[in-house]
View: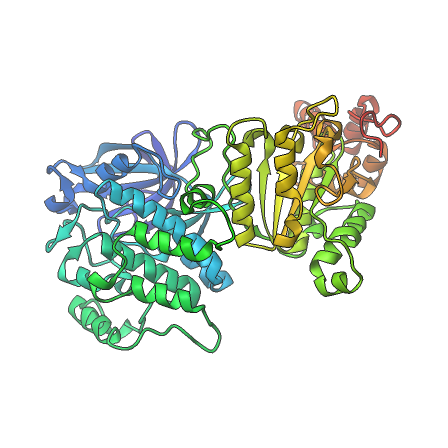
Length: 579
């Protein structure tokens, strides 16, 4: 039974929900005084062995978590706060870390099945990146397993693997762990840990077991231990006996390349001296296999571009991180209306990419890049993302304004790394918002060396399985040198939301507010030329009026607002946006 219930105070934090009870602590979600949601871990000091207290005073996990966040690493959970309080006769320590929206790796496998080899490697690279950082601080994790890895959802919807549990972190141990070992995952533990020996190589073994799990859906040498009960000696014996058999690296359903078989054998070697010498050694072995010989640049550059990018606040000028999603194949279902535009995109772009044999038979030229342009608020970003989802390829979304422009130092090099990384995941769609910031028009018909470099990067990228999809509010400000066939060779105008789209936007904004019966068709007719932002403002103003009058939002209130509200842009002028 949990110690705290919803609404209880722990220091300056308010408990929201119980997560789980561990051997020495309980975990919760909690709100801070800033109304932000956090992870909260509460330690009952009366249950804590002195060996788990740093200098007999503070919980080791708190000390190590704070130390690891002296420098931020995206693949390690972030420390926020810690403190001490009393409840009755007992004294407690608590640890607060950042709350991550996402899914645990084990939940992802249980729900959606195993990962393909490349995706599994990308995840393990991120975990290894976190381990490399920890080991550089002379700290070991000791409990790498799927339930301790969160696929953290970023603001752009991408997923970033992050180690979220630091409950077994320690310095190197050579015989007597100062942490509780009874809850460690038996088949993710290196053999030497059963003798009380924990080193960087035991973390390497666990990372190898994680890679195996992502590909095969179970831990290496895993057998049923349900009959062992709580007897740790029996569990140890069962694991030892299971590991006498050969490691299964091929099944009827799953076949992996020879290099991956060799990599897994080395990472999971039961002999410590035959294992990868370090997490960095394991990392570099995986990267070396992923990066083709034809791709220029050192492995370190690929590491920076794919796995070890800085946080948003630390991101230097011209730097970008590439994290990817897999398109669902049905993205246009999320876009109401715009039937003409969707059909045009299907015919001119999607068909050829999804039917390469027909494209070759009819000698259809490959599409390198497309530009979606139109006034702000018309839904270009929504169309771009839904297009990527509809195509069904891997894709990433980046904002040019945060990335920098090609005239700033290092931007072209970073773009090269991103295109190289995308090649590894081809077919791949690179989505770039507001591309006028990235490739600005130099003016006076100038052709700069940067323009030529950008043309060289984009020209022929379709042959590498890459498609650039860009948006722009101001297409006239994009360098015309790259607006040509073989580079950005298709241009599509995204107009204000049409009749059906406007109905859908009204429905979404009114769906969770108190309303009378609403005639959405009338609202759509009265809001011709409105962009999404105009409709949002209309609904907000109507809601404010209804709230002030203490009545449900009515058709009359909405219509009254529409009578005096004008669209931000008008199709009667289309200033700057003529086709």
